[in-house]
Length: 94
Image 1: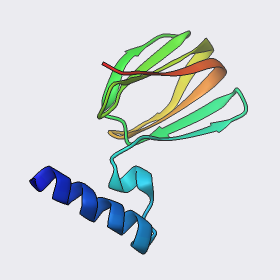
Image 2 (image 1 turned 90 degrees about the vertical axis):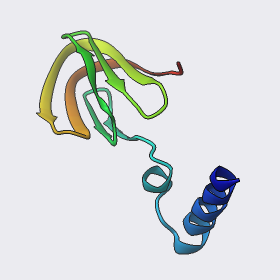
Image 3 (image 1 turned 30 degrees about the vertical axis):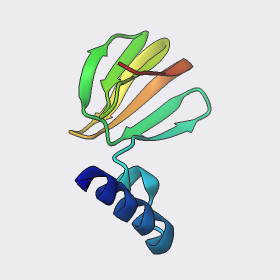
């Protein structure tokens, strides 16, 4: 019952107060510039990194980014800026 009430309140706040869904629903915000930059906010941590792959933990599942020549330009507790040639961005639900 409490979970249903919380979802109802959250949905009302998103709709009526015009609050961003990513903040209210604890979703990642992903901003890409072409195939060369990707900025991810609201992740739960770095799982793996190489020059060809980056894997981040999300609240629900993981985010997998594949490509070439990856370099982490900025890394903060909940934000990351990745540069390189991005070929693929995939959600993995586990």
